[in-house]
Amino acid sequence: MKKNGLFGKSLSHSISPDIHRYIYNLINYDATYELIEFEENKLKENIDNIRSKEINVNITIPYKEKVIPFLDEIDDVAKKIGAVNTILSKNNVLKGYNTDYYGIHETLKQYDISGKIFLVLGFGGAAKTIIQYLVDNNAKKVYIASRTPEKYKSSFKKYTNINYNEYKHKFVKKHEAYSYEKSLNSAKTFIEFISYNKLDNICGFAIINATPVGMFPNIDGCPVCENIISNFKLAFDLIYAPNETKFLKLAKSLNLITINGLKMLIFQAIKAIEIWTNKEIDDNQKNKIFLFFETKKNSISTYTLDNPVNEELKIKKIQNSASNMIDIQNDKPVDNKLVDIDKLENKLKLRNEPIYIIGLPGAGKTTLGKALSEKLGYEFVDLDAYIESKSNMKISEIFLQGEDIFREVEKKALFEVSKKRNTIIATGGGIVTLPENRIFLSDKPNIIYVDRDCINILSDVNLQNRPLLKDNPNKIFEIFNKRKDYYNSLCTYYVKNDSSLEELVENTLKILKDKY
Ligand code: NAP
Image 1 (cartoon, protein in one colour):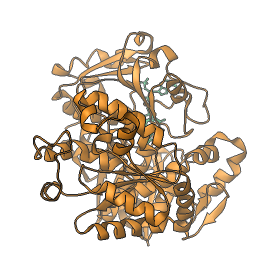
Image 2: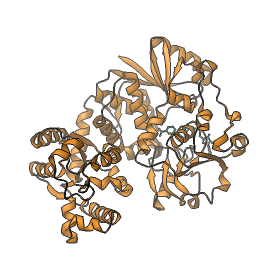
Image 3: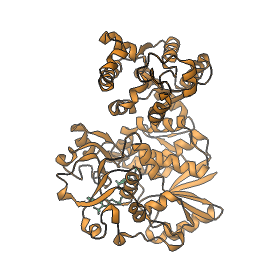
Image 4: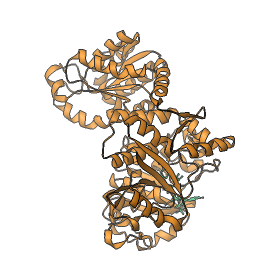
């Protein structure tokens, strides 16, 4: 049995063992995951230990930068950031990775970063990872709020001339790591350090809390006031416990899009496991993992942190973590019947929530939806047909007024039909183009993505009644490239339509059958 673990100084709050245990069960990976807590003077000793015993580890506060000098190799992303959160120990070689970066990518990939303005609160390890991600994705400007901006300001000039020596990472020379500041140096993003009392007039796309303020047990803390939050459209808090920090509560009350740190946490774990096993976890499984913890998010924060009476339970959990995952709600060890629990949860969810079908025009959404509704006894709604009957107009006629107008009508229709229960909704191919729709769909448990090759759509489907394609059917390739990431990231089930419709229906039913 393979041994993996987590290095850190204070790990009692960690839910990583639960996440790893769940994933190991799902992918049949025979391994344990232990919390390995120690003081800084024991870092070298522990590194020697994982080297000799080939134990893979994740790294958390305060060792993400401190472990670097002990490593033999470091991958490019971790090099750029100057922080490592995952070590692969193999054949006496220790290689460092930064999978937090991947977690951030998975969390933010549905948003267009390019050309936008961001405010990042704090300048610790997590902030550096997110800033690197924003720079790599061509953010226009990143403000970094720090309690001591002058520490960085004097040497950290405009993006064109970053000379950031004061903050040089203590990389060992043998890696010749081109460190965080060097990689930012070549970037086009404007970086500015700013103090908290100068934030009033800063506005932009997203405000990101990368400080521990608001984290358990100090859940009443909020890094900035309402006025500052209201200058942004999206608030991302890297904290995952509590599930909704005071910062996110305020942002929600101001109608911002809000995101917590759970997705980042889950996806950094997924990536670490992919590195350790040298195998990709497929998208269906990734969605399933996220969905499992997403549906538990309230109990995660209640159980782990919010409720002091759970302190004893928390300790039990840690003692058990390496050998047995605890059922978060019932304080019972979960055996290998995790899939059954999952089934049960999804069964309940499926009964209540609509099943959405997304994919390109001509992918087979309507045909699949009708067939499924017959088999499952669900009502079927074709969103385009619903819009036509409500508006007494053809889709092509509404489109004549402009795509923006159509998208608004479509959004309203989506929200309306989503109130129905036991319903299968075949959406229009462009439903994912509107950010509000993506946000709305992002927490829906039942979304089937029907993936069909453009070339097959072109050869089989009459696209003359599709407003965006009727004049130039080949535009479908361009449309696919723009939308494919959205389809993939939103779906909870993926089916490929590459043979007969009978097979498509059969395959989808097989996937859903598990859930029933
Ligand atoms: P860190 O290295 O300790 O840095 C946090 C930064 O926040 C500090 O550098 C500091 O910046 C600022 N800060 C600290 N205490 C503060 C206070 N009382 N008031 C205002 N600012 C303060 O921690 P980190 O590793 O970057 O983690 C930051 C947060 O992200 C934590 O809550 C952590 O749990 C979370 N995180 C989440 C994930 C995930 O997967 N979801 C992953 C990593 C981290 P200045 O001194 O410049 O002000």
